[in-house]
Image (cartoon, rainbow, N blue to C red; front, side):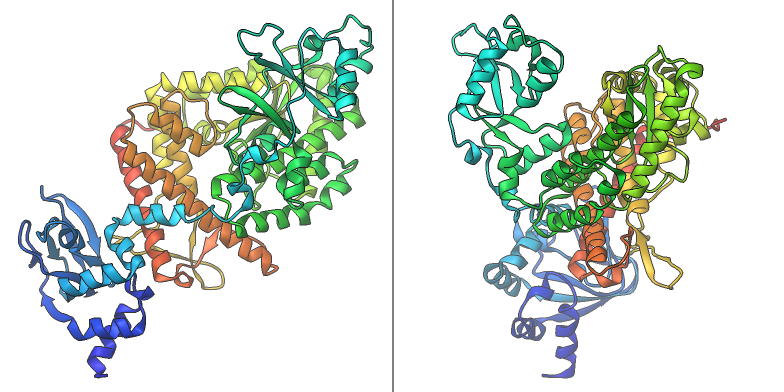
Length: 626
């Protein structure tokens, strides 16, 4: 082969979609390529003109425009353009101009058509715009895990065992014994026309709410001791979704519904039979530990569960929810051990998770952000010694289990973050009504909040206050937007990566600081504007989609970008663990394939576009924050 043709082939082979083609196919393309040179500022494609070739940027830079003259994209070495016209009308849809002196390969339309017909991956690539390619990359994730594919109905192996709410506890216990079940569904005694589920009762409920409470008299009914309005799952939901519900709610029994009817129950042991190393299995082991040392010994299992979920194709949303559920289980068990050591709490309280755990987006590399919300009957003189000891026990225990202390002191051990509800109301009101540089940093942390243990209504009240008051205060949202825009994606003028250099002279990108964190920040602001109490970023996107705040297409792009960047970060951490290294958030883009780098750029471009929209919606004000 002539050296010129070999050079064309080798260059094409470096970039998608040509990188996936056989070398003999690339040899054929190289023989048909024509090369043209364009000076900076000259037109390459004019709107509406006939187009006869796919264009490939060999060197230089090209600007692509919309028909109205608005800049659409900037392309550099290895990028292609003109495919939209070839696929539709053979007319130029997006005019192109050389931004720099540029060398362009022209690949004839008939060659392009042959490649589309013979190579599915090539066709899928050219038929998709950048964001669509990102969508394809995201949708390819999460398909391998058996728990994702299996439906809840496969575990419903026996008829539903149920009693009515007016059944005595003695009769209900007899039914459970005869049927060899650890749980029964409670139905409304009125048929209307079919029985309706109103509650659930487990063996544990009978022990704690009947026997231990001294209520074993025959007059006590199931309706008096049942858990009302139990969480349920649909028969066609996946086992993974059932697992996440159990993790999130810390429950072991889940009614299964089909067309509005309760058709069965699945429990923790059912799923564990399928997944002996599942996150639910680990949560079950956590709940059985009797010491901090026993909990700390499970850190290896936590890492193993994380790696397995990644390798089996779970999505970032699923992994974040599962790892957060495990983190909650550690916290809940430590609080139970603390109460066993210190005695019952003198007043009601709620242990509040903040940040990634509250959002159900926690990964392995995390510190602890938490606080205590105390009942308004709290008296510091009488009660604070107890709650300080409880907070210290839990914080030290979490640190022993791999959740490092918060460097900023956002922990319940800090007197400022261990306060009664009335003080917390004052905090949130002041932060929203009188934002300043210091309190805005608190808002970025404390506006991702969720109750983990105790009287959960205390934290729920703060969630409601936060959403209601923020949505009614555009000045606060404007100030939050200014903070969110401080962290920008690592894209240069030509959409090349802007990298940093670490102590080992590696060219790196902070995937959290320059990617997932700013995405989370701007999603939070839009959700607050919609008065949503959702905490998880994907749930917040769902809440935003129910309003007219953003275009549906823009929300889809945000979802794909968040999922993709999160999975890159998750896989990077899993790789480090398997190699015996400490996980971090720093990737080296040079280690990625060309196709992966393209997807990274598209995800960062989505973030850049979203920040531009945020800048437009909340324009900078002349006055400075105090």
